[in-house]
Length: 441
Image (cartoon, rainbow, N blue to C red; front, side):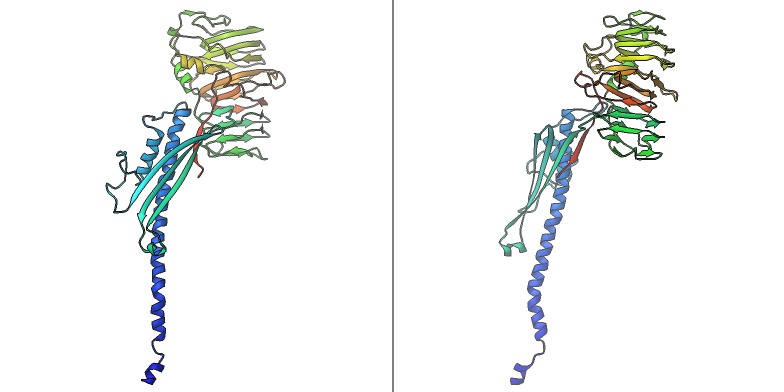
């Protein structure tokens, strides 16, 4: 008996068994905690989707982008909760959402919740989604926990560009040739092209701007650091004048009651008429809204000044500027341009600050907008269907602030250009912008 009491055989195994009891308990508790983590990951995904979807819905109301459509049949709260339901999180008693993957019933003691909220600070709108799941504790009861609340929060922010661009290439790249330089303190340039040279610098050209530039594609340069400050692979910026293009491209000569063929332009603020193949004699002063069809040429060296909106419409219409004309034009801002009755009030409102519209069908030759070193185009040059070669305006003679912007199929700069869109919206016109919805938490 005394020998048995003194025997140490099996003592290590006995100690190991005793030690395994809390170890196994801790491992089981760790497994339970792991399930909480997995639930939270699923809840976070649902919260992210809910906040983003709710913000998209509010962005639709705040500033619908031209050329895009929004489904605003439901509230932001509904859209957020629908996105959460598609990720298996629903409030008890909520309606059945399209695409929902929520279980028809939950295990005893388990409940899920989805809450949406929105607020605005400093002109920026936020949408918050809080997604949670309450479930019973098991091994965690030894820690005094009877239920576990797993929650996830996501916040989406609705942004517009602080400094919208004053150059937008709708399809093909923005290209700088030779020693062309674009200068601006208020706006940058942008291209919706997805090409690697969506903004391209050929030669000793560049940007002297105090605002970001954007491109869906990349930026290329032959040397130097011209691409510095260009934000690449961004989302496309919609055409703010797409409704204008649709309306003006549908115009025909039958929409005009009278015609004034082969004559110098006349002011058309109070009549619906147009010119075919006009000529521009020296010292032409324009004052009004002008509709042109046919081949419109400005050549030699006339001086063209005034406040006007020039509309070039119809099949086969083209605008050609050659020679060394001095063109100093400012777009009409008030009253809204008049015109054919087929143009709706909303289209006419968008035509404020529109200086030149050319609906020419696509051709490699495109449209040449240029003049002497003292020329300027104070208004929106809008050529949505063809590339534009832009000679620009001179800062020495142009008004110091204005609405100098270009929206075209593609844009090539060949001269030094000063751009500024600071007065575009104050005059009631439109300028390129885009709303972005991003998760910030």
